[in-house]
Length: 194
Image (cartoon, rainbow, N blue to C red; front, side):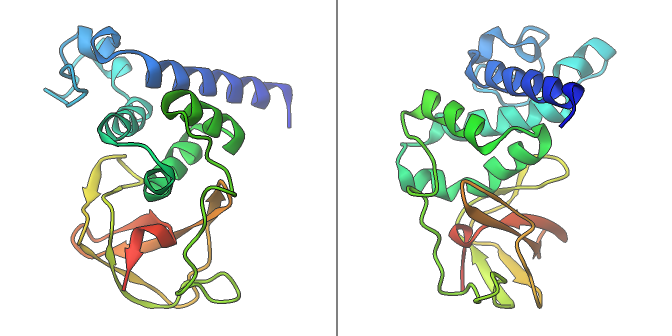
């Protein structure tokens, strides 16, 4: 890994952590009137200054921050939002270890492969998911926008030979087709039921 790449990763991790831990009313998007004191979007950014305070990166962090603010934490809760955490990891390039450190600071729980046991009844021996129709157990953020539009109890399809596209904290992440939005979403075995 090059020096520039490592520097970027470090800057992204600190920026992510700073946004995640800053109170809503101290964020730039709040001060210019884009979000309310709970992080909900009031209006779309119009000027270049406003757009710089509400980027795709901000939306991803704000969505995660809102989810974290709503949750009573426990191992089951963290495993329920592993696909959303994978989106953060994918967008920022942050390592599992750094993300676990941030979650520990925010929640008091250290997420690792020992605390997140993957459900295996519909995972094949080659790590692919069994094809078929499934129902979401959790709301899922869309990869393109970071907005939660794939809602709990909506239907998805797992195609043939759906192998993991990545992992976070040792839990495999898969792509699935969401019927309502007609988009691919990222899920884990924790997010679905047949």
